[in-house]
Length: 128
Ligand SMILES: [Zn+2]
Image 1 (cartoon, rainbow, N blue to C red):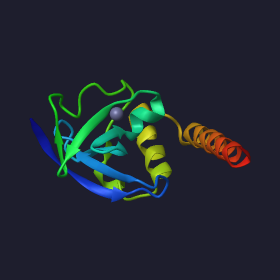
Image 2: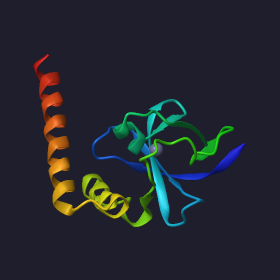
Image 3: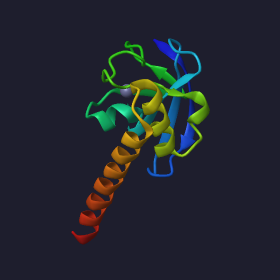
């Protein structure tokens, strides 16, 4: 079964490609998936939330039995289409504010925490 086409884009953080799937349930919103191997892609947002939600992409179309929009982490929402090309962090920050009613300050602090964590882990990798 085929669920529709994806758009490819390059990620600044990951060396591999990202595909963007337009949500049919929420028009104007998209899910981003990053490539794991071969035809397997995983949801970017789910990954941050600690869940692996993968899809199969063949010839730029999502294939499989399961709708690519179902079975995501309960806190995983598609991103507004307009911010797909914006900086990733900034975009997720804005969607957090709207969807979870968080105050900008709170989100900003969370983001700083995440950046620090990422920095620490990459530093450790360099030292290994
Ligand atoms: Zn997801």
